[in-house]
Amino acid sequence: MIYQDTIIALATASGSGAIAVIRLSGSEAISIVDDHFKSVVSNKSLLKQSTHTVHLGHIVDEKRVIDEVLVSVFKNPNSYTGENVVEISCHGSLYIQQEIIQLFLRKGCRMANAGEFTLRAFLNGKLDLSQAEAVADLIASDNEASHQVAMQQMRGGFSSEIAKLREELLNFASLIELELDFAEEDVEFADRSQFKDLIDRITFVLKRLIDSFAVGNVIKNGIPVAIVGEPNVGKSTLLNALLNEERAIVSEIAGTTRDTIEDEISIGGIGFRFIDTAGIRETKDIVESIGIKKTFEKIEQAQVVIYLFDATQFESQSSRFKVELEKIKNKYPQKPLIVLSNKIDKVDDVQISEMQKEISNIQLLSAKTGFGVEQLTNSLLELINTGALRNNETIVTNSRHYDALLKAFEEVQKVKTGLETGLSGDLLAIDIRQALFHFGEITGEITNDDLLGNIFANFCIGK
Image (cartoon, rainbow, N blue to C red):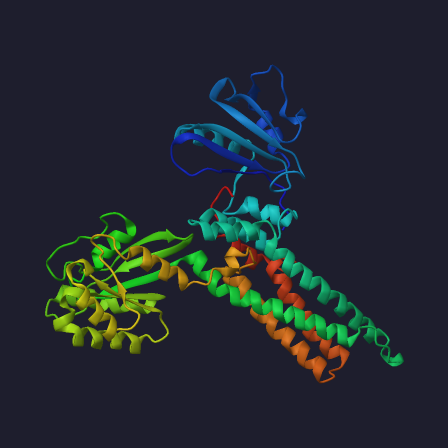
């Protein structure tokens, strides 16, 4: 892909605001804007200005002044895309935005495709592919953890780790390929013991990166948490307490929640999506039955389940609570389960002690007063291994990278087996080349138009 034309797009969010930024990129970007820019300093030409400078003036269409603007000039190769880039900061009127964009479209620009500015940055060597993908993750980040991971990847932390492994493997591959040229002399250029040490080191790093995806996927997409239990045990009150707002309707009438209610908050920098579900019970109400069916669908989708019961009902209903609890444990054995005894402010110490004896690891809660909510949020955080995040280690969040790492790991294991069994150099070389191929897929040394199209189609226009 080689782009010769000049593209234009709104770089700020669509809609009215105090200001809007319109971005152009391409070899003619500066000259096209220069033809319609009248500086407050007489006879100033943008073409003659230094890169990374800002200029006050007006955008004009013949004799008509469209707006007073600030124009930022970035000359190639020292720009985001590696091309000439101009950013026009205008007033945020929708009319003004469209007038400026339409003016430059008439003068030879083309509307940018989704992610095309970042695509050009990749094609011009300003970013590798994993860094380019991190740009989209950074824009989409909505909590501290996802922001931290995206920034680390955009600054090249993941890329440099992969590039180092690929370079070392490539050096040994070259030596083995060289051996094939001197096959008749039976010369060994690649030290097999050093090569085995390298493969062990690559295996260790790949396994760590692959394992980090479990945390990375959670950080990027958030953790769905289903709040379940019988009707009127305080599920909606708990949701409101967690969100610190009246999100769900709370009523003394059992079965108030007929459908699932969802909302997301950040706890300790990690996004949690809480799902308030319909109470589980036998019912002849058709609408409530549909809600209960949805409850079990949401438990299937959740990564964590919070089971809530009414402490005031425990003495008379403990057998039923324990049966329901066992049903959930048996049906979803792999899902972490947090058991909460709600309305604890309405029972005495003797009743609390009895509950703690009968149900292990029970947590005490008063959703109405807020007692126990902090302990619950701490328990949720403990379920997530945030050690790698705290230590600023590389964390894989992208499923495409994860898939490439798995394939690279498989090929490296073949190389390791080949070394242990004395496999010939020509067969070793095949497996090494495949591992190198999958490393290259991550950073973009190896790519194709379809892959790039799929990646950048997910970007917003203007980035």
